[in-house]
Image 1: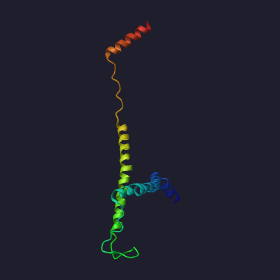
Image 2: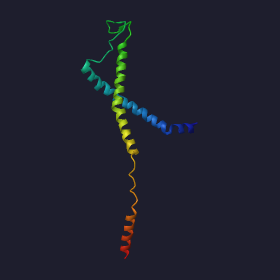
Image 3: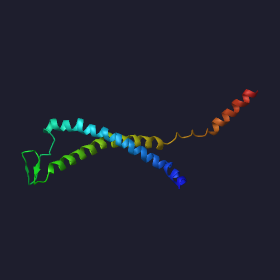
Image 4: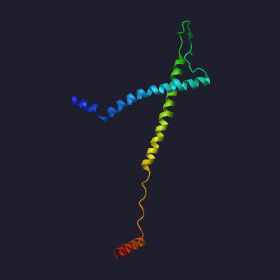
Length: 137
């Protein structure tokens, strides 16, 4: 039983997956900061504060600031916009540059090797033979 577990844990793809999850979690913080600290404030400067949490369908805002009897569509809009911003950041900062790097790498690997020089003509071979005979004499 332990032997099978050890074989499972030491398989390469399990370790790769663990590393990917850890790196993904750390990278998530970078993307979150990019969206919240850079992109969202830029949007806020252009269109005003990008916060839709006060949009409510069919309810009212109570005196204590809580929604009474309504659907808080604004929070859904905030989450949707946040998702789109994160997706755009990942696409433009990670996906496109990695795609270009992989295309360059593929092009370098697919580049044809330099062609071998053509064999010397009969005249050149004959001249070489004459030269070698003259050196011997």
